[in-house]
Length: 165
Image (cartoon, one colour):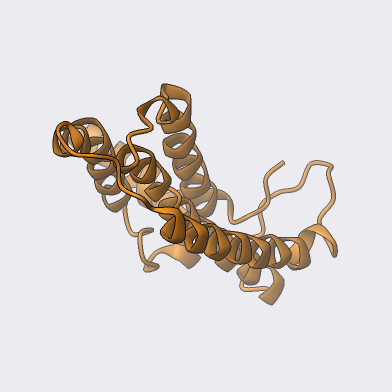
């Protein structure tokens, strides 16, 4: 049991990027696991039961504003990531992660963290499908994509700090 605890401590804390140690959602994997478990419970159990005998909701205005917010937010984050290294000092060759407090590296890390927030917000899309009774759009591939991309960006932020090669 001590070996398991030591491995957990090493993998989740000692090998993690120390700059994100106290950031929201980055202290341990449990907040992310809770979000994913809540998402899966909502879309697989709660919403299907709730919508069983109800007519579909009309969500055009909500979806329109959701899409506008997502477009603007993703454009800002993409610009931030590009100008925090990819158009300045990074290259497509092998590069080690920069764990320093270099302003450019920290800026990249912050935009990576904002990507986690945006990926978390994207989970709402599936609820829109189910509330509109478009269950076929909430396919395994759709759900897998949202969950896996959230996990991957969390891992990248927690351990790599933005420099993926």
